[in-house]
Structure formats: C-alpha cells, structure tokens
Amino acid sequence: MTRILLDQDLCTRCGICSTVCIMGIIEPAEEDTLLKANDTKAGMCIGCGHCEAYCPSQALVLEDRPDEKVRLPAGAGDIAPEDIGYYLRKRRSVRNYTKDTVPKEKILELLDIARYAASAGNGQPVEWIVIHNQEKVKKIAALTIEWMRTLAGSNHPMSGYVPMLIRGWEGGMDVICRGAPHLLVATIPEGNPVAQTDAIIALTHFDIAAPAYGIGTCWAGIVAMAASLYEPLQKELGIPAGRKSAYAMMFGHSLHRIYGIPRRKPLVVAWQ
Image (tube, rainbow, N blue to C red; front, top):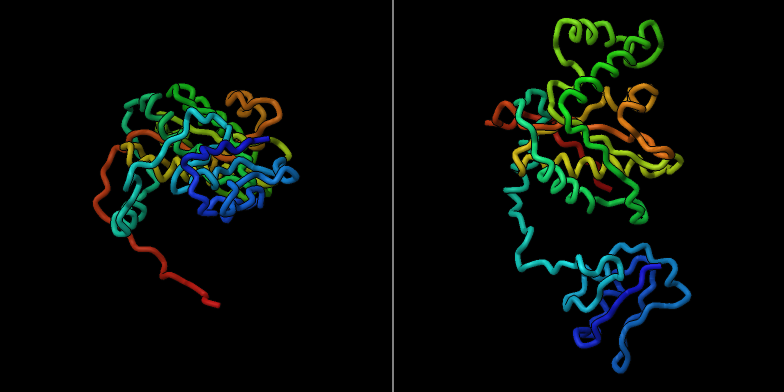
C-alpha cells in the first residue's frame, strides 16, 4: 500500500488533491483540519501520483522513492503548438542507418522517459530488452527469416510476402532490421489482457522522444510477429519466463536528414 506523505507547513487546504484522486482516497481538508486519506480506501491507491503532481504547493509526496521527487522548474516542458506540430509531423520511419553505435547512456535516458508512459491502473507492466550488439541484431534478423520460411504455402497473412522478402535476404539485403544497429523489445507479463496496449504506448514514447536525441526508429513488425510465435527467436531474445514479447522497434542514427513533410489523407472527423 502506497502511503501519502504530507508536509503540514506547505499544505494550503486548496482541495485539488482530493479532486484529482481518481480512487477517491483523499478526503478534502476543512477550515480547521488538514486533508487525510480515507483508511477504508487506502488499499485502493494505485500510486498514480496525481495528488502529488497537481499540488500547487508541493505539500504531498507518495512514499514511493520519495528521494526521486522532482519539482518542475517554471516553464519546463512547455512547447509552442507550432513546434510540437512540426516535430511530430516530420517523424519518419527510418530504414537507412549509419553504422554508429548509440551510447547505452542515451538509450537509458530514452527508456527513462518511456517509464512515464500511461498504463492501465498505473500497472507499469512493461520491461525492456535492448539488443545493443550489432551482430546479435543480424542473428535476430536471420532467425526471423527462418520463421518466415515456415510460412511458405500456409494461410498466414504474411505468406504472400515471404518469397519476395527471402529473395531480398538471400541477395544480401537486410529486409528485416534494415541494417539498424540496435533493436528494442518490450516485454509484458503473460495473461495480462491490457499490457499489450501499455507496451505500445511505452514504445510510442520512445519513438517520439528518439528524434530529439538524434536517433531514428522504425517499428519492427516482422520481428514482433516472429517473436510471438517462433521459439528459437524467443530463446535468442532471452525473454524471461512468464513474460512475452509485445512488440519490437529498430533504432540507430539515421543515414539521411529530413527536409520536408509528406501529405496525408484528409482529416476525417465525426462530431456528435
């Protein structure tokens, strides 16, 4: 059970914490009393941190690594609408990479950002496997091709693409990981019905934050399919017992810069 710690000297009794508590645990303060947690509901706390984040005086802190608490500096993270618009619109799936290695420290910074991605009930079920060794990325691509060979003549949705991709691979093209130096795999607990979505949200955080660090990404859909079905690939990835691959993403330094923004289908919105 996560406890809520209160600095009585900072509390202004504004009541915001009780308003934003989605579980209704925090009882609002009154003129002559401070706020308090409802004892009968305390066990329902999911540790989301809304009470802490929205407190204007920062009087609250969850008893969950309180030493990591950070107060936002004024203006931190503010982004002009036109800036975030251009930033997101120019995001591309990168399929041409340099051979340069991305330092592990930079990868950890990105994964730390992804740690704050939304998850159902604040369950935070996503764990990561980073294939940093470029030779191992190539081995994973080869195992993915092995899996694809098993699809020939089957009714699998990928079976029609198999001959073309195998020809490309045999011709010396990395049609699986596109020469990316690194691969990121999100793993989730088996039997968790909502964790798959949580993993996609977390990977999207990594995907969106990466260009700010000079890193290009591409969703590795074929690797993800193979990792969900092909045992030799699962063993090579080292997926822990009780967990499974949710999806994969290739990444590295893009070989080319972006100079324009392509068109998209017209926006379709139904107002009700």
